[in-house]
Structures are given as C-alpha cells and as structure tokens.
Length: 630
Image (tube, rainbow, N blue to C red; front, side):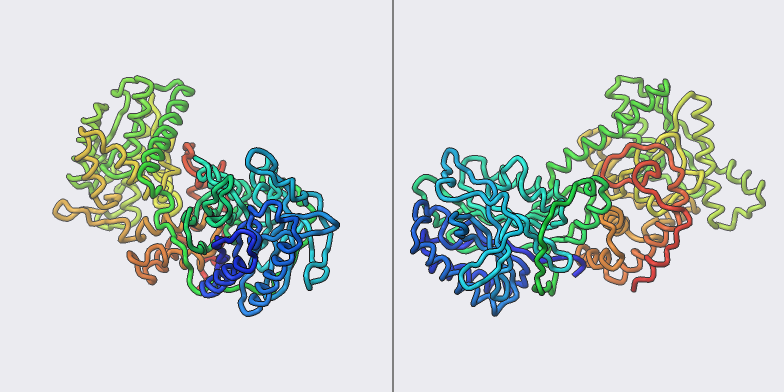
C-alpha cells in the first residue's frame, strides 16, 4: 500500500531460564500480530532463555530446551504469514553466539550474531558469548534445518522492504553494524536488545534510535527485554521503540507486567526517495551482503498511522514557540546581512493588511531592533486600489503606527487608469489584465520609491504562492530581497500569532488573522472583500500539504491523494481534495517560469523552491504524467 509496511516490536512476559513458558508467550503475541496484519515483528534479546540466565547458558539442558521451544514456534509459524525475529543462543564451531533468528512460515531464513559484546560495569557478556563481527558467507545446521545463512552480512528482502538486524550493544557502538547494512540498501533495521533501566537511560535509548533512523534515512524497530528478567543486579523495564527518519512513531509502556505488541506503519517508499534525492547517501560504499528473499508478507488492509494535516507547523506548543523564534531570527539576520553588505540603511515594503506583508514587516522590525537601527528607516507603503477595503487598509495603518515606522499612503487608482488608457484596456473589463496592471503599478511605486530613498525593496510573497505561481510576473513576483519566500501560508499564520504577546499590536494581528485571504484587485461591494483566494484555488491547508509531500518525498499524485484523504477526512471531502490537487499540480508545472527568476531569500525550512539552491526544473516541462493519474 503506497510503500507502507506494518512492523511491530514485541515484549513478552519472561520467565528466567524457561524456554517452554517463554515460547507460549511468543506464540500468543504472534497470533495477535497476525490478526493485526503485521509483516515483521522483533522480540527482545535472548527471547527464549531470558537475557539474565548468566552461567546457565553453559548448561546443555537450557540450550536444548531453547531449541525445542523454537521448534514449537516454527511449527506454529506455518499457520501465519508473519516474519518473526527472535533472540536465541547458538553454538557454532565450539563458540556460543548471541543471535537473532529470522523465521517465516516454518522456515529459518537466516541467523545474525551480535557483533559488539559488552563487558563492563553491570554487563559481563564476554563470559558467555563470542563476537560474530567478522562472520560472513557462512552457513550452519541448526536443529532440523540445514544450510542456514549465518553472519552479520545478511539482509532480508520483500518488495520495497530490505531489512537488516543488529543486537543490543551493536547500536551503542561507535560504528554500529547497521551503518554497513544501510549503505548496502537496508531501509529498515531491527534490534533485539536487553537494556536495563537507569535514571535517564530511557531518554538516551530513544535518542539513539531516533538518530540512527535519521542518519540512515531508514526506519528502526527496537525491542528491549522487559519485566520478568532477573533483578539480581539490574531491572529491565521493557522498551519498544519504532522510529522513522528521526521521528518517533510508537513506543511501548515501560514496566508493564503484560505482553506488549507495539505496531506502526512505516513508509519505506518515502525512505527510498529521500535516499535517492540525497546526494550524500550515494557516496557510501556498499558492503558485500547476502540478500535473502521473503516469499510474501501480510498486506496492510487499512493504514494505521496518523497523517499530520499541517506538516509545516509543529504540533507541540513549546516546539512551536521555539520554531517561530528560530524562523524570525533567520529572517531578521538574513536581512541584516543583506543591508550591511549593500551599505543600505533603509527598506521599502508594501503593506496591505494581509498575512504576508504583516509577517515581513514584523521580521523587518525585529532586524532593526537587533541592530538598534532607527525604525523610521522602515518605509511602509499602503497602496489602495479598486478592491482595497477599509478593514485591510486600516489594519495596515494601525500596525505601522504601532511599530513607529515611516508610513506612506499612495493611491494607485489614477496610475492604473493611466495604464489602462495607454494599452487601450476598458476599466470595466475586470480581466487578468485589470488585476495585473494594479500589481505592477504597486511594484513600480515601491521600486521607484526605493531608488529615491536609497532603500531596498522587501518582497512579501510566500512559499505557497511561489508553488502555485499566485503572483503577477514582474509585479509582486519581484523584489530586492524576499523575506517570506520559503515560508508556507499555514506557517505564516502561526508566526504572526507568535507576535501576539505584544499587547500593543495583539488586536490588530487578531483582525488580520481573521481577514479572508485576498489580493483585493477586484472592486469591493459595500466595502466587503469579493475576491477570496481560497474560493478560487482551494484551501491553503491542502496546497501546503500537497507541496510538502510532492517536494520533500516525491510522492505520486495517487499517494498524495490517499494521504490527504486520511489527514483531512473531518475537514474536506474526497472530491474537493482531488479537485484542489489537480489545481495544485497544474499550476505548479505551468508557473515554473516565475520561480526561475525569483529574488534572493533566506531559507528557513527543508523545503525551498529557489532556482539557485533547491528546485531546478525546466520551465517548459510537460505536466501530463502528473495530471493523468486517475
């Protein structure tokens, strides 16, 4: 399903040195995994014996009991289509190895030994186990199975999924084995672990899993031994973690007395695109690996994953404030550098009373505050046209006065009428020409005023408008420095909310935030806006969602539609989402020529459409393959 695979981390109730009892718990969890359409599930380190069996690992009875228990699990696995990764001890060439065994439909597909054996403080593992770090291209006979692939060079493949295995301490090593597995194409790593509980260790474990999934551009599934292990010297709380590209998807409840199966749907198609589009990933040399094919996996019938409807906006309130502060600082310091390098002390900005110009003015004001520059050198210009309402104009004036910047009010009606006469356009004909003449008149005023004042014209257009080409070529499309060019509309709204802490401008900002988005280029009726952008092109919520998945992950239209229907199921109908998606794709391709010649602008997030840095596309690209998908 669009590159999604259902994986799970399992933590079973453990009985020390009792493989028979532990196998029953494993089978119970495997039944649950099958019912939930899980494709692959990983269990903790030394699942069947318990990790804390200590010198009992040298006892033949424990070893034989483990093997008998594994045979029962193998027999049960014939009845379900779930790949299970179980921790066992294996003797080979008179050495005892701590391993992960991969089983599916009654077969043992491969065995991966632990590479790094901890042997300090509370861990004394070298007393029992040998390192399997240098084992490759080896086969073993184990219980009733012959010629089983054995080594740290194993990868397991099923369609888009290519997974590797490491065991506990391997993740904590300076150079984890998963590094080489990932460089050879593994997009999913499973870790069987037994990590004891110490103050602060749970947070560190999560950070390790997050970081490895981010560095490896992969998903990482971690399972650590739980309650039931011996507490002679340590306590094990059971920690199941599933991360994808640095984000936590799911986590178990630690210190639970019951079996746990933590399930998440990982997007491996997304991982593949990120790797292909990241030039640095291809620089890693692939190591020699053996790839073991998996015949089939459980298929996801219904996606069980939260899809963030506002991917540009952090969901955590504290993180929102930190993100806003960071963005404003990037904008402000970008402008400071531009002005100081150009030896210019003034800026000119058009203020409409809308979202974009409001944020740009606030960012400019922050830059001038940082440098203790005279705010009278911020020249804000309101330019009333045929559609300007008193609400937007008054908000613009109030904001400028509250910030104590220089305010100029220049009416563009006469200038526009002169342009109409010059080109022979009937002012009663409210066409694109009627609108664009006004937009270009405003830009002409700003540019000429900047020349007269020795100032820099600051652009206010945002990332969403750039993606859609929702601007007038050589009008609001052009400036001398674009402060908002990498900030989408949904994020701009939040950034303005960030400034509500200033009581002097709070009410003004609230009214701006509640004003319909409009270019105000068509004549108003009874001083009311008649031209609402989102009624023409669709919701910016949808456009920003489409932009994020289209650019960041290269998602196909069908997948974008699929994700959007989940994310917005309570807000937008499927037919509306589909309609707006086609508008997005059509405009994105046909408006590239505007993006090919845009002003410099500071990059604030991972997505930018700068033709110099982030997005290069021919202006005459065909859109057909992206529109003919349904």
